[in-house]
Length: 286
Image 1 (tube, helix red, strand yellow):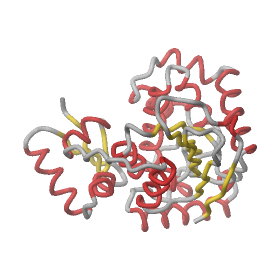
Image 2 (cartoon, one colour):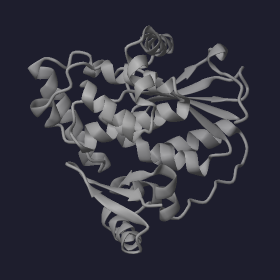
Image 3 (tube, rainbow, N blue to C red):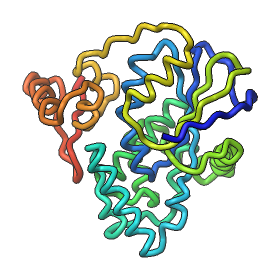
């Protein structure tokens, strides 16, 4: 694990939560996708204590994704991520239907954020679902509009904003922050506590959930009581849509055990099963 100290107090903004996490993410990054269930669990168990600030930062490995060699490297990287995380992502996309621009999706996320941070988060998730589970080219305008609709955005406003200088400048601002904080890869998380004089801790890469939880507890500098996980039904209700491996990760289950529990909810007409090109979604019905 690379854990690096950083001491620029101006990057921390006071909030009602005692701990702030800067998450540097890239819609094209398979490790960021694999981080999703760990973040969900962190936000549930430590909800009273933390807030997460998303910052779009292109992983340097995707910047030259137009060459045949780079596409093969990305395909192998995705395959490796799928193998050790169980999160569905098929690297053959980079051979069959490659993303042509690594920046368009990030600018689109910033356009979505102009309708609110929650709208931006919903849109980012929709983009990741289209990319990693549906194998769609998220650098195409039609796919991004579909993501906007799934995220319940005002599509007319989104179309206007994605073509505006405002969204582009917002993305450039995120990239500048990443540069000034020496962030060179995604995902990278930087943890700050409420004492702006204290050092932040920067962690780049993907690690077991326990690593992130340990950092949170150490930075809070006091004993905290974690919130209990909700029922799986309430978890699906909260996040609208979840993949089987996400449920398995959050609840410490095997994929088979998670699917068994999810099928019980399906038979009770609480959720519905949605088969994607890569893996299975479960959607809350009420």
